[in-house]
Image 1 (cartoon, rainbow over the protein chains, first blue to last red):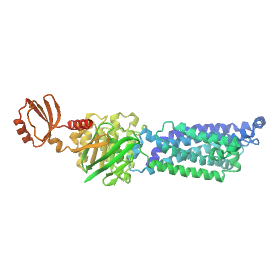
Image 2 (cartoon, rainbow over the protein chains, first blue to last red):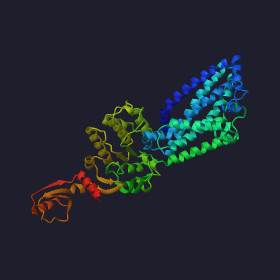
Image 3 (cartoon, chains in turn purple, green):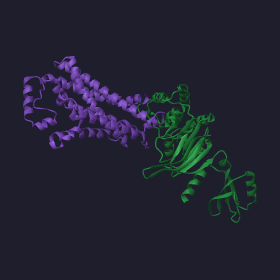
Image 4 (cartoon, helix red, strand yellow):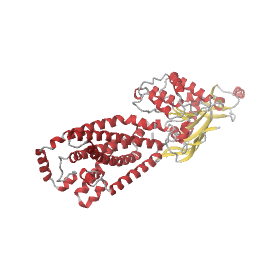
Length: 269
Length: 291
């Protein structure tokens, strides 16, 4: 597990920074929840939602019935925007993972050691997964503490609700990571991994919104993992079978393709 | 026995030529020089040997193991010093050495310690804080600490001061004496001539010549003759250059016989020198330019 440890050592600072920032935002948002439960806020939110068209509400992941005095409705709504940031992180982590060392030239250090490219690939993948899961675990724990502190949910109820939300984020995060890894294996230089990562995430986000706003293009929602986990739908319908199939096929195909490309890739000086 | 065998190796980077039909071999325990101008194909050949890149055609093997199929096995007994050392910037030299040793089954702490003492490497400094010379020292220690059977060095003396260069070559000679095969790519013809048994000259991706430095070059003389325009020179005299009343020849043959021949010439003046690798190099490359 040499490459795993080396990779962990080289990425933990970035993972730590993202986790701290997102953790603080998450906790502050949850701390704001008790003020949502006042009558005046309830009326204000209701009035605002009444004035918005159903299509736009759907695009924003809301419904007219949305009751923000329920913490999962409130936190789930906030979380969908945090999820965008988490997905950018996941995609960036994976887009950088293979090509960055090639651009920096540090990969020669590994390539000159008795370890196969497949082993390097797998260990880098595991590192990304471990980093991502660690981040989500910390964020989930913060959310559970927030639920227990700022709502009437018990610890058991909080764990159950937060697990559904973060479990779904983990699933779509792995999809973005697999696509990011595929791009990383194809790319010739790591210049601008953040741009590529933001591009992947926002592209799928925008086509999801397009699918909601235009009935003729509703099939596009199937290609937008962010749409699969909008809180309302997630808590009522869960992730649909077709969404599992699309996601798992994407993960498998992207990962296998990335591995095959990486194994045969010339290391350009 | 051949330790490194390269047969008809070919590599193009898109439309650009990397190497074309490169063939040579390196014997076990030999220090083999690999010489050529920038972009000639030295690094491409080495990178194929180490499976950093894949050949378009041809084969390369190290101790009988295929460079593509058995690359992991090759790296278990091969040390490599890159021309441009790019390791992890925020890791110390000591951490690099520790990571390096974890890739190999046998622990080589004693050897690492000996080499650090020999080259005077400060292991506490981060890689990004090391000078170019110290970065090279670190790469050399990483490569030697595994007690390799084969050592591949790509311009190893770049950035090293003359003292360390001497230590490095003394160490390489002792490694070769104990059976390590060394492939040394270099621009420094002096060091190649002094330490290598044989040398391959490469230009524009093609091997021009493989020369045995231990015999042929040492027997080879460069003769400069002024005057004697009417003289008929024997076949052993290979004309290299001619200008006004001066002619430069290469002579490969018996020295006593050469003196006898020279005594019989009617010329104004002459000099006899041992041929240096530099002259061989320039002659080969200029001849190719004319072609």
